[in-house]
Length: 548
Image 1 (cartoon, rainbow, N blue to C red):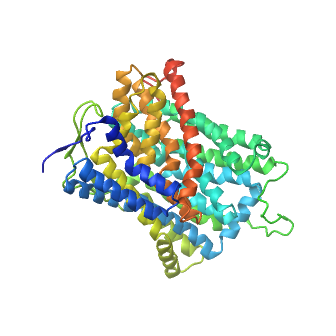
Image 2: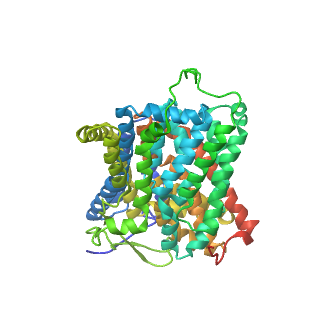
Image 3: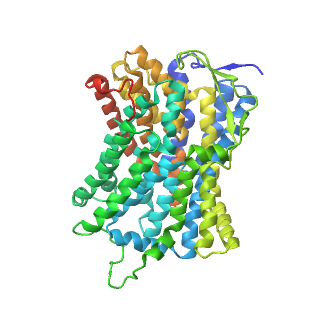
């Protein structure tokens, strides 16, 4: 097979080539947000647009286009869709068995206040799930739990997308940091520490932002002790762990610490008045059934099993056992046959394309096994447990189609060079590059759906541009992943997962429009923090940093 060289100006006019590269993503956002088209239809149309442009506009060989689509489809099935189905399956088991009522009562036992319940579930518990594996599990599980507790579907989707931001930089046992180190060659300790000096600032204000989306400023400020406790706990642990311990367990430790601290704090500190939705029934504790500790642990066992399995599946020792030596297969007609060239990379670089077929080591498999064990523990027979799984798969069929189309579009974008053209367009910003470099990471995560994917696409570009502009490559590489955390909430697959979990299929466009303004505002805040480090406090940028 002949090598195909990416062309970063296929139309001969830079701005026209940039517009063409942005067309599939723009079409997707237009169909979702303006036309309010169902996600699976919008995704298919955007995918078709991307395929046509890859063939006719970028002149990518048809065999390579087909190979990139196949690669994306396999990735979507094993790494994204499988995790989503398994996570919703666990939730469906608690509903089918009737134990979700106990779960609701146990959280109500900590606090009846909707604002504090959101902080406990969406932020603290979601951070543990993101740190353990990510892959849509935090959105799927937390969204489903909150709906079961009686939260409003639309607000739940928005809150879960907002909460699933700050933990993303260290999600999947620190996978974005490792990816950044791999593509840039920069020390992992420096990258972890720098990200740990940017993202925790956003994490500290996230509880305030989250509660403000639920209610007005007056009701938000009435629980300022809870907001401060949550923000300082999670942001503080993020900063400490990323700077002094490692970049792997940041979210797991931070989320668990925050969950435990808030659970204790909220038992003793009670906001006045308790805030609930107008349509919520009045809580009368004298008539409520009081469950024993054993009953509560029994009801929570599926999620406890899920957390244990997800954390265990993410441990390198376990992953190595579950992953066979031949699990990675080179994609025929694509692997090492697409060449990226300067200025996107420092020197000619052949894009790898290796399908990871290690289904057994995927986070979704651990989640599925947790569900298989949880069913009988909750009193369901194995056959009934499997019927619940089948019902879950059927219910999610259109959403899985949407996810597959979006992931395939993302892979096409990467291999034909559309992503590089859009990234290059943002590099021509001179002194403002620290801000726009952050937006490159934001754009990359929005396109690929993962912070690690954004780092793989644009990490080397950040370093090259930083060196040209006499900026710190550690800072700009870290800015890519820091900006990417708030791009996650507008990623098409994230929006779809959140809508599935909250029963809002067909409302993806409305949810996207609701979170877009938050995503842009937070991206500008993070960009401003990066500007501060670049021009005001460059001495705070780590260089040769060492963990304890």
